[in-house]
Amino acid sequence: MTVYREKFQEELDALIGECIKLGEECHKRLAGTVEVLLADDIEDARKVVRNDAEINKMEADVNAHAINLITTQQPVATDLRTIISCIKIADNLERIGDNISNVAEVRKRIKITNERTLLRFKTMERLASLMLEDVYTAFKKSDLDLLDEIILRDQDIDAVFVQITTSDIFEESDAFLTGQIQLTAKYLERIGDHIKSIAEHIYYIHTGDPYEKYKSE
Amino acid sequence: MAELNSVKTKVNIGTQAADAKRQTIIQEDKEIVFQSNNFNLWYGDNHALQDINLTFHENDINAIIGPSGCGKSTFVKSLNRMTELVPIVRTEGDIQFRGDDIFTSGMSVEELRTRVGMVFQKPNPFPKSIYDNVAYGPRVHGIKKKSVLDEVVEKSLRSASIWDEVKDRLNDNAYGLSGGQQQRICIARALAVEPEVILMDEPTSALDPISTTKIEDLMQELKKDYSIIIVTHNMQQAARVSGRTSFFYQGYVVESDDTNVIFENPSDKRTEDYVSGRFG
Image (tube, rainbow over all chains, first blue to last red):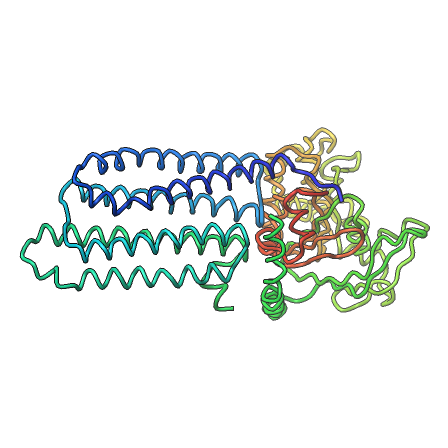
């Protein structure tokens, strides 16, 4: 059997590579998200917000590459699912970048000092970071069980979010402070949602069915 | 990508169950037009078709795809017994048309070819006027009355979406038309004898994109009244026009399923490789 389309395969692998690079960049930035809240100086926060443009650019590049491949190569089946999923995954990663930047915006407005809350933020960040690492592993190893586990682990982040937003810090009279804590918790919780969504897209590449449908069959 | 394929094998069990379910739904809805049962064909020693089991339903467009030499044209030509024109051909198994075996039921070849029309790769109008091309079949069937022939010609040309383009020059030679128009004249000629099935063997491969689009639109109209079986090398065309697709490879049917399944999530790796353009 003669194998054709080697050039297309190279291009497809390159597109996947761009997505992985975007994921690695988000992973790198995610690791310092809560650290920025602790800093006395807000310059770090400003830098994080400024640098979000790089993530946006990487996402735009993935989209442009994907559209070019669809237009020129007319892919079908797994190829098409992979390309469409790359677009969606890049969107999720870009939104993770936005949420990291949003947390930095909070630091520009206020310095949260409640240690218990900060520790819980750190827990959320760490859980998200581990999920993102595992999503990469699951993709490389085509490990559907690990993807399942990652999707379930989003509930842990949600649980910490609920714990923060129902804690007694919200009994304090400083509405601005509690509002910013609420926002920060929400941004971190959304990062978990986006990683869960990425895991579902990878499921779709492998099975051809949306995650929910695949699991119900 | 290699990992993806191993995972695909794992999920095939679910796909097969879904396939059986879909098959049942289709069979409940539409009557079967053609059914081949363990059909085999040899050109001399060359075993060109091997155990072909396919079912085609009415009011559907069935695409047959596969690399050159895989047997798809041979199979389509078997459906109206055109392969018998080759002296060294031998067949086994049966092909049922509306429940009757086309080889043994006593149905004449003429009757079969009237009920199962064919359009070929290259437009092949007769060197006659547009009118005479379309009226040829009905005349052979004994229709001589001018008013009846006029009616048949107009109806056929309208059904083939070419009436408006040729109504003022019906007596012009069909050779003077463009390739796309000639092909639609050939379709009108096939429709004139009111077939039940239209076989199309790469009907647009010699046409420009606009003519191709016209033929494809026409097929969507025709499927309301006819069953269409189309052989095509154009993957996008199969994906656009057909409801079901069968993939032939080296004389076998590798996979036959809803067109969406074949192009979005085929069960067999060879199908995936072929529709993705990775071999052919």
